[in-house]
Image (cartoon, rainbow, N blue to C red; front, top):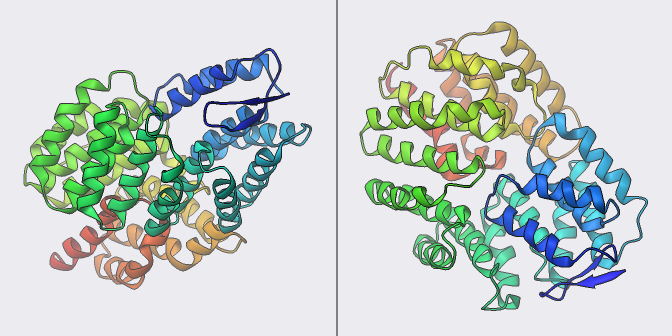
Length: 405
């Protein structure tokens, strides 16, 4: 049976399930609520043949960038192959298949076709936004959203989330004034839009407005009492802002108070936050004592082959601690990865492997070699994805170890 939501999108949905249940799940997802997957699983337990629910689950798992999710993702894909689909859902299944095959350009082409025909398809928009981000394609991040924004009703509750995404794409493209205004407009409409708050934080970072950024986050963080682990990335930003303003002790206090406990959840972004902040603190001359050692519980993740941006962060603690066995396994994984087909494989070959070797060299006090390797790939480092603020670590490594060699 075809059902239609308030935005005019059709769903092949079971007869006895109100479309409002799916909207409720989307609301949780957009507001970074920790119950999103539980709600989605509950819906699928009762309605296993709902294509867009299966697709949303598949996308969320894929965006988790964790090889352990592969079986669950495959289950979603296999289930979708048995269902009758409408035109929009067929295009989503095609995009999903391309994504799983690491043909990101083909997946993005499908998502953009969906958005051309169905500009209020927020699932397609979020998926495309994620893929543009982890390709380092800042221009496409905001252009994709600019094309669909006129179709979004002014009064719809989700328009603010579209503005938040637009803000981040603008910021990563260097359009700071418009990014700040757009992000703040989104937060005024919905203070639970962490992505919009995140975008404005990036503006403060990129414009060296360190303490304004601290104040911005200090005002908003108390509001975010029921969010998933992405909130800790905002705490990471606050620590980096303090650090850039010269207050390394305040940054270290945030690390100890806020960034260590969520590591137990074993989600990639928490380890990325911790590892990259520790290396920044170390370069500021702080004795981080045994904090690197505490990241060794996740050294096995240095073999992950989902996104090279993430694998590089998992490699940082083993590199600094000179964990030769983990280093060897990780570099072997990245070398093998770089010989495969697919876009992440190509990025590994062009940039990722050299960057990994550079981190290992610096960790082993071979700083001249490490810096030389980073310099060789610095102009292409954006292709590993992540934000300017996150990738700034690699520039910092070049500058710091060039001065201290």
